[in-house]
Length: 459
Image (cartoon, rainbow, N blue to C red; front, side):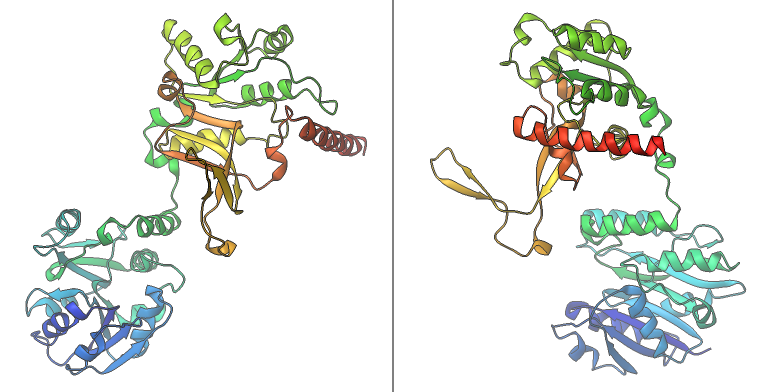
């Protein structure tokens, strides 16, 4: 059995010498070693050149599966070992234990990864918990880790690594090879020291990209990872529509009736409360079979803030021993509300565990504000190309906002943490009927939509 080792490195000057010294001190002698380097700018390759390396390859744009495949293509062994350059074999038996596990229908083996004394506490914990002392053979569990692994070349010939994913190419390969009737094994005797751990010091961006790939590999369904009592349909969610007066008909359409119909049709909303002293509004609420609530005198003026109104509503509910989980706020003045936007907001806030989520319109322009110190200040980033900028969001709270009831209980609508923004790129969704200029435009749009709908019905 000829063994080839593919070592991946990216600026590993501090570790490459220790890694290769461990590789060439194994009981299995004369392995073929190929290095795949992703543009190191330190002394990694100079240090590696001190060892009997068979070949050094360089890759410019790094995708782990592509780097591994290029490495395998440059080897001649019938067994191929993968090792990250920041991993150091624990002892001289590492390689023999790793390749020795390739027996029968086991075509992939991965070894143990141990922290070092200066590993970050979270990395130390994760390595100890993930890589235990007992060997196992996996027929369904697709966990596999190419920082320290070996595969049969014949299996790789059948199924090279995916070259499009940014990470967990190893787990994806394992799942696919298991689907062909083969097995994966874990061999704890094949141990290496891996100082930064499997989660890269808890990098959020890496975790997010890993999660996206995992979702595709595992056929991820959100409901499977939520207690049933936390699912949107099981939460106590109420809608609150506070308005001083009816917006009237716009383009032949009643926006208040449309909003109430949308809220009552939402399968997640248990009750809708319309808060007003306007008899037209209260009558519309009763026709829609929602609950009409008269505002107390102190909240019946334009001076009353939205937070105060929401605080009063949840206070009234509490007095009736009703303690909802979330409150939905929507304003009928946003006439061109997209269908099912409320449903989507509720799903977002529940499945992501947010405190507040609202609709926002992304802007990439530069903004300036007048500061308390009496000067104009730029808000956001410099005049960068759009592809390099992060958008500012214009909040469209009245188009749709979902917030925890405890936030409303404080007299606020939006939390100061765990906030999500659901972006709309349709400028029509930003139009508000209380603005006379915008109202004229809304009437034109609604009238045209009604005309087209009428023509469709006639046909």
